[in-house]
Image (cartoon, rainbow, N blue to C red; front, side, top):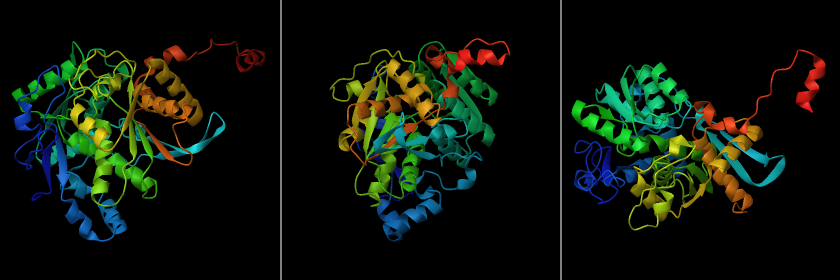
Length: 415
């Protein structure tokens, strides 16, 4: 029985905790963790769905939730503590043609590069920041390959909070520039994202900083789930057939699942969409291990830095969601990712970073293999702007040399 607004439930042992008993991982399962396996004890936030559904009809319930900006389904109590920057409410574009050919299915692109720091990660940072302010917390730390760090830095700047960001030394310059410009303290770490992740947790324990790390902090999943509420609303309160999601740590896909699961538990939808996890072949540690008894880590090497993860921190929750709701998964090569990014840009005017283009590459794979049924609704989550990582696309573009300012020379470039 839920007494507080929400409770935490351990993904692994199923034990439930009140809001005051835990902050990050399940204390019992956390003792089993090591640096070579995905962490056990990731917490899931659960609400009193029966009480929330008692407002009236399903339409009345959703309208009530929407009117109150879904705060009844968020682990905060006062929207006044939320950042001033507008997060969420990003556009959903519908396309019925691709490469000038009519599509037999409905294609929707959810453009989360329209968030304040140009990435999906703002949804999680927004909620973590609001929770911190509501609870009098001033300093927040995170490990990041770039997007989560620049997101937290920007959101904290709007809230006059201090952000400390630990990044692997190979993180893209554009993302590091964002972090520094927002005034955050940046700490480059020799090694991988996983090394930065582990160091940030040690620092949290030593200095008492609030940690935003994905999955480790259960509120990150709650922030990311809001995209599902928006999709349901933007599709006139219907459920999409498929959602293609780029996957690294497994937090975004868990957030998408959690949002639709909330709607399902409230009786607002009667089926779950098929959610497709798309990973780069060079960093497929989640999809490759879903059917394995023992987790085996392969070092990551992919152009899609935002989803380059050796140890998926939300592996077990993502695996549970995929198995429970019959999700699908596939991998695509870096060449496919870059080709998808170019195809996406020239067909839609949307320039996505490699991680976001990974989801689009997954959709193209399904389309080319006739796996998208006619008249179905298929959504691709575009999670970050291509301006975040211009270096990655240099190999597929060509900028011509300058011409003398003579109109006759134009022919060389337009023929």
